[in-house]
Amino acid sequence: MLKGLIAGMALLSILSVSAEACTVMVVTKGASVDGSVLVSHSNDGFGGEMNLVYVPAKDHPKGSLRPVYPTAVALDEMPEYNAFNQPALVTTERGDGWNYPGRPQTKPIGYIPQVEHTYAYMDADYGVLNEHGLMFGECTDKSEHLIRAPYKEGEGIFYASELSHVALERCKTAREAIQLMGSLIDEYGLWGTAETLAVGDKNEAWIFEMQMVPGGKGGLWIAEKIPDGNYSITGNQLRIRAIREGDSDQMFNPRLPQMLKDLGWAAYDENGKLDWVLSLEAKEFNHPYYSQRRVWRGLSSVAPSKNFPPRVSGWDSKTYPLSVTPDKKLDVEDIMRLHRDYYQGTEFDKSKSSLAGLYGSPYHYEKEKGERSILSAKTSYSHVVQNNDALPSPIVWYAMNTPLENSYIPFAVAEMPKAYKHALRDIYDPTKMYWAANQVMSLSQGYFDIIYPLVKEAVGKSEEESHRLVKASRGLSKEKFTEELNKNAVKIFEDWKQLYAKLLMKYNCGVGIRYEKLPDPHTPEKY
Image (cartoon, rainbow, N blue to C red; front, side, top):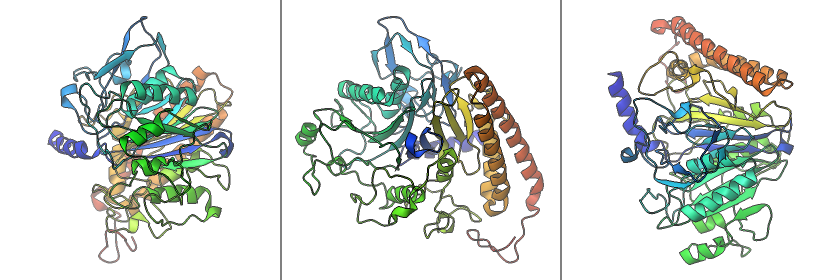
């Protein structure tokens, strides 16, 4: 019965895992408390990959080829290539993390020349972080000209996820990564959807945007540097505006202006500048505020002095800049807090919406046709990548499932404990953190206002200990740092198993769930 239920959920995920998903944030070196560059990403798709995967460095024979794999997260599952929602990839050539014995191996859709040595990196549905501190975040966008471009043999072979993987394998800096990914788009073409990749290293961060073209040959791409001292947020809408030839803070194919003209897509702003957003008709998904309300929330939270209005004139409004200088410097906790945001304390509070879940829950469980918050019921994982000179190595703070009920756990670019590897959605396994996290989350979301405060307390305690560990470990070797982080991750797994048991016993058969009158499941009175 469990397998049948999960199979039904998988069918839903095929329809929704890749669509209208994800929020990305960037904090530059000069905008952070400790000089870190931060790049965050929420992977918002029911049924998506939830494991963080270590891909080891590797030497390759001279003249060999690198396979380019399809991915279900781009559009839909592709059974003919054994590309499914989870595991997102099955292969032996990227180390143990993507090796699932008994599962069919994913078939490549193309090949490119391989380099003789590739770097170690952390992976998920999209690339996360490599050993040199190159980091990524992603969100899906939309161009009205060409909303979806399924993979077709003989056309483009790259989607944003594989672009990020190749960059992590071969590059040390954000600039190198953008130049490489742009050249791959130019030569091999794109399929899937319009995409944003946030790309950072220990010194700078960029927003890299791309769009398919009819026929899949080549593609359109542009990247813009986020000024040092600034914060940026993107939520499923292209955000770069004027195309500025000769500006060192932008990179794009030199033929981009002519390509837009040849396609008949070129559009200009009020100053006569070729405008990327206007040219691609980068409209929002489903609702006028599916994207821009999240942008408003991020910008107004870090820079309240700017008084950004929550309402705009339309999808092409310039009300919200690509980035802003925060009123005060930001730290990792600030970005984690934003990934848990559902407009608390505003007129848009999702827990008070008619689409909210039970008992004050801020989650919308239907496919989101209305405006979205940064927090989403369909998050399979989220991360905040942190890189600075003081750390023994760059780290990724990783939370499985929704971050409201789960702790962000720090990891180095290295092998992880068994509890954090090879979890499967269709096989329950109590030795995996994914299932411990799910158990706590399920209890919390069932009686949100009653159980969540206890979960919130546990999350806060866990993250406080993790932050203390990271700060105290700055004089350690990379190897010792990794060891301490992995010990911490194992402890959190044990804590989460105990938390689930404690909650289950405390509220067994509804004990302790009391209301003075018939409850409104959305806005309970007293309990």
